Image 1 (spheres, helix red, strand yellow):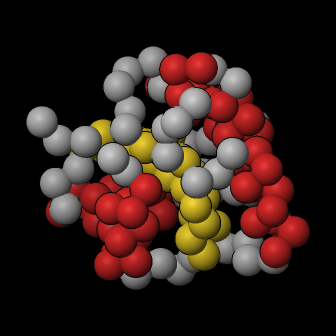
Image 2 (tube, rainbow, N blue to C red; image 1 turned 135 degrees about the vertical axis):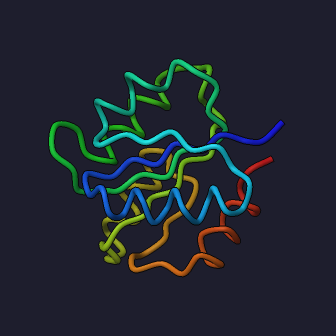
Length: 120
């Protein structure tokens, strides 16, 4: 059975690139356009979340906090995929419960390497 990864980004082109990369590697992908959309779709079995930081309605940091507040998802790997690279933002993400951080633009091998590292 393949693993399911949720990709959360307000940019449909970024979601498509991530989905293409993950699907090619054998993962099932659930797409969400922002944090609120992601929370509504999280009911199913998701093995990992890859989320943008800056999104309308609910940003990536708030999404992580909401996901972490549910004991079912306490150990779910959550990786930020964002253009933000400042240390303060990374620390904010880590404090909220982010497992890892990838700066856009990403290379497919880079994202797959991170997934292999953090997903059990």
